[in-house]
Image (cartoon, rainbow, N blue to C red):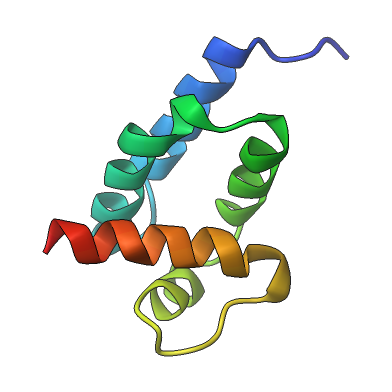
Length: 88
């Protein structure tokens, strides 16, 4: 399998951030992606990619602090939450 080009990966992740199951996560993740994806290194992009495979209802509860995020996503969720708070 060939390695996905960085520009294609960024585009794919941005599109997946915009087209979620619930509108709230569309708004939250598309804003986060627009601000941060281009600056992420490969490991951070891997974590973000894995996060996008999670259920939207779970993601929403984690981002809004209703439930703690799993350890592997806790730093990323905290960063997304900070971005959300700065928007409001």
